[in-house]
Image (cartoon, rainbow, N blue to C red):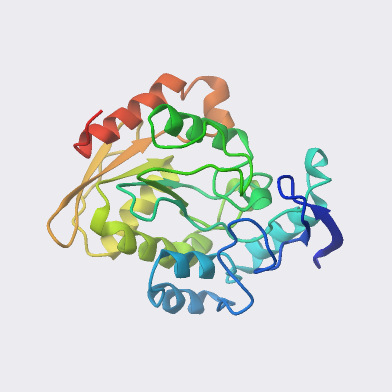
Length: 285
């Protein structure tokens, strides 16, 4: 579907944008511009990821990726059709780069952006109920400046933490296909590599992210248990980087509405796993 020609005001800045948002047109925190190289096929991703010199360059390249036709079509259709509650807003409609502290000691990995969350706002875990849960927990733990993350440009900031998704585009029914997961993997691998010098722990939200983080560690040559511990809330997989440094991978149930509405994941459980992460990273409370 072609881009929506109707330009609508950003909910914070008031600047008008079409949907999806073209890179370099003024969206808050947009990492890309018109000169950012674009992956147009799966074969383009490994080279563009590996050549990214830093997180800023990586984020820019992630945010314009068009390597997976099904995901590109879905995210852009959603950006044009919109949800009724957000019909008066522009939708980002592009991949969602990792976001947070570039010197992070903790990397939080999720599954993929939500169609009317990150795909609308342009920031990971922002603008939906799942984001409400994880950012509120990070704020209670002292890792986030604000208890909410509503839109890019809202003043939110993370301290010592970066959040990324294993798959960077919103997938239909929140279910990326294996080939799409594999196409996106080099973006995660490069992000982990760039963060690794300061990284002390990884927190995986959900079984998909847990498997993706383990697979990334193995591709990077890290030592990982085989077989790994079975996924469960609070489970820890001890990883060892290529430099011989221990780095725990801690699992949590995903902050999905299905889990939080049913009580499978409670606020106390989420707070507890962040305490656990802090303890494994040997950081003071």
